[in-house]
Image (cartoon, rainbow, N blue to C red; front, side, top):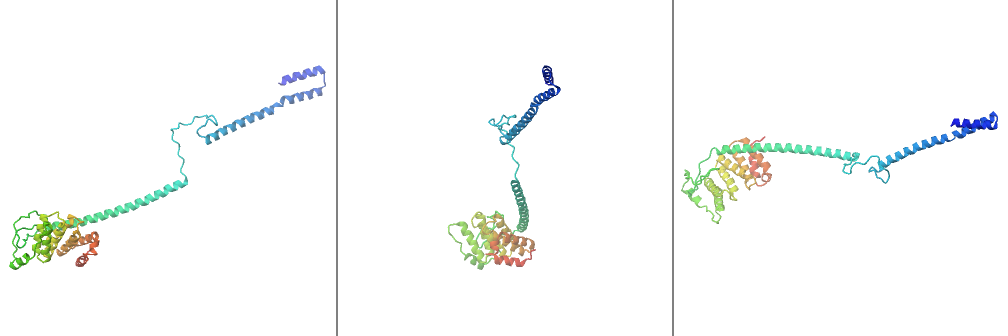
Length: 323
């Protein structure tokens, strides 16, 4: 371009033979004209670069606002992930994290409480197991020395010890029985209501109330052998233990008391038999088993210990020193 301007200037100089100053001025004018568009071109390139940068930034902004690459706003350079792809979960807020920590602390406290309860329950079960073992040992010791059955005056039936099934064994005569006692026993009438089991039990109870303990023992044993599942069975076993205890036979009494308590610990006379077992152990001077039975009675039957059987319970407690 400069060569063309020089040749044009030379032609103008040769044609008009203008002075040197005039030629120099013309050359400057042509140079100014020639170089005038250069800043405009530079500005256009800079504006183009800025425009492209702005467009790129707008596209980036659109991708943030419209992450799905909506074609209504721009042509995505990279295709969007498949719709089935799981979205990335947002990080938990400070409030949610605080809630999680609070719940973890609550769970830890609950776990500590449950652990303590389990330990207490295990200790209670172990204590009860020891007491039951002690009571069973007392029952085995009492059953090891059964007494001879005593016939009811005027009856040919035989009595049996706890666990015995020989209801028809031959009765052994009672040496102390005499005509006067026999007449007194026969004076006690046996009820006849049409309910054989109830009649047998009531007759045994009447003998016990009259103080004929050997005869009551035999009668109640007959009742239990003939009606083991009768509603009065728990009453019969408990009353039989009382009859032996009143007859100064604590070992036999302990066997029947334990038998009744173990047969059904929720029965009507289970608590009475447990207290009777303690009384029998006191009579046998077995303080350890007596204390175990008393503690079991107070814990398992608090209503009886503070109500109907309170006098007997307090009397038994005064007879032994339990740790």
